[in-house]
Structures are given as structure tokens and as C-alpha cells.
Amino acid sequence: MAAQTPLQRLDQSGRKLLPVLSALLLGVVPVLPTGIPEWPELAPPLMLAAVFYWSLARPDLMPPTAAFALGLFQDLLTGAPLGSGALTMVLAQWVLRSQQRFLANRPFYLLWAAFAPVAAVATILEWLVYALFTFHAVPILSALARMVLGVVLFPVVAWIVLIPAHRVLPQE
Image (cartoon, rainbow, N blue to C red; front, side, top):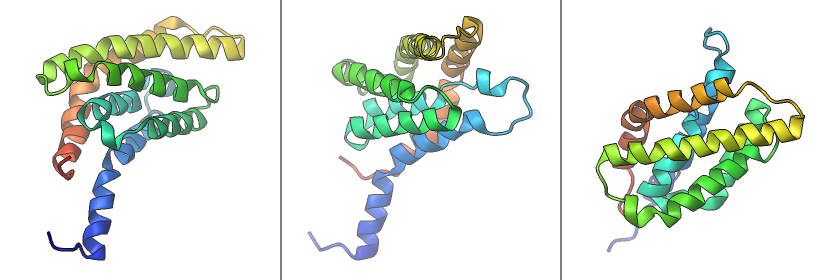
């Protein structure tokens, strides 16, 4: 095997960052000015979708430290209680890693079906943590609407962002 040039090593390193960068990009969506009334309260959990996908597709490129950092970034960006997003991302990843041999290399519709309960539990957990830390119970309906929107949009996010990024990654 021939030695790689510095440019080839940089390219390979950049490609290995794609899972984290795609999750980071999707995490910014809830704070984008869309003109949609109540958008921040209704924005789907797209970063969770990315962590879910990458934890199953390429767990080597989405370590727990990355999920934790992404969750903290999301908390800082959205104004959520610090650590709530990190907790959610790490717990979701922990559950997914324990189920990876059952979910890896399955048809897409099974991944989509598996995302629904993960999104539901993550939504309830974030809602509970927010209520406990702020002593203010926000309406659960907006949290449930976020979750439903996230599940409905999961295939769109996967086909537009996650699967194309997965195709350009170096093989394991």
C-alpha cells in the first residue's frame, strides 16, 4: 500500500468528520429564522435523527463524546437547560449501540420504525428535564408535535443529508 499524500490524509480525515458535521448542521435548523410562527417550539429533532442514523450506520465515526458535545451545542444554541441535550443524545446512542446488531443493515423502513420510539422517549425526557430545571411545565402538545414532525421528516433528512454523506465515507 502506497503512502498517502498530506492532501489525501486531509481528505480522508474530512470525510470521517462528515457524521458529526451533518449532525451539527441539522442541529442549527431549529434556530434558523424561517418565518414560521412558533418554529423554535415545533422544530423537529433533526440532530437526534442524525445521531440515531450514524450510531447505527457508522458507530466508529459517532463516538459517545461526539454525541455528548453535539447535545451540549444544541443546548447552548436553543437555550435548553445545559446538559439536557447531551443527556438525551448519549442515552439514545447508548440504547442504539446495545441494539446495533438487531438494527444494522436492515431495510430503511425498519430504521424509520425504530426511530419513532427513540424520538418519543427523547422528547419526553427533554420535556421532563426542562420542566424540572425551569419549574415551568411547557405544554406537552408542542413537544409531541416536534416528535411527530421528526418521525415524519426522518426519511427526508436521511435521503437528503445522511445517506449521501454515508456514501462518500471511506469504508470501515
